[in-house]
Image (cartoon, rainbow over all chains, first blue to last red; front, side):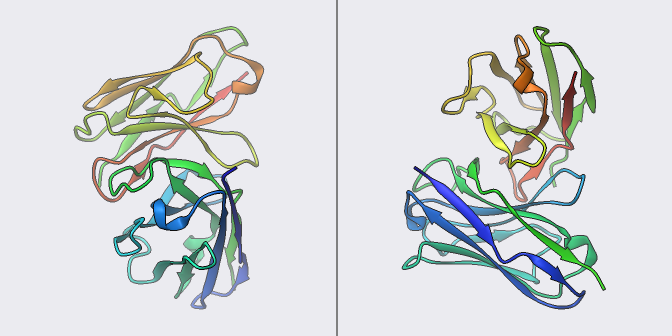
Length: 123
Length: 106
C-alpha cells in the first residue's frame, strides 16, 4: 500500500528557511520520480519541483527556482524540500506526489498524493 | 509556459445529470493532459491521464477526451460524491502547469 506523509510545515517569518519532509512507504523512492505541488489558501494547484527516479534529474517552477531545493534520502525513503528566502506568496499547503509510472523521466502524472503540510509565511 | 484555461469556473448540476468540463491549452500539448478531483480538505486524486485513460479504481462514469488544445472531462451521471473541484494538468512542456479549476456544485 503506497503512502506519502508530509511533515515540517509551520509558521515562519519572511526571509527565513524551512525544510519539508515526505515519508514514503509501500515503494522505493529510487524507482519513481517524485514531485512537490503546492496550493495557496483558497487557490488552485501549482507545481513546485521534481526529482527523477535516478536522483539526478531535477526541475523547478519559475517562482521557486534558486530558492528551493528538492532532494531525497534513499536509505530512509524520504523526500525533502529545502525552502530558503521564504516570501508571503509561498504560503500554501505543500503536497508530495509520486509519478504514476516507475523508471520514467517523462511520466509526470501525480499518483498518489500525500495529505499535505501547511506552510505560513508571515511577519 | 503553457496556460491551461478551464471552463466553466462553476458548474451547478443535480445528481444524475451529465457534467461536461472543458480545458483549453495555450498551445498544442498532444495528449499530455490529466484530470484530478479534489474534495474540500483532501488531497487531489488522479482521475484521467494521457487525456483519455482512467486511473486505477476510477469509475467508468468518468471519461476524458481531446487532443491538441481542447480537452473534455465528462461525468456521465453525477453521484453525490462527485461534487468537488476538478483540475486539468499538462506535462508537454516544463514547467508542468495546472488549469484554474472547475467547481462542480449541487
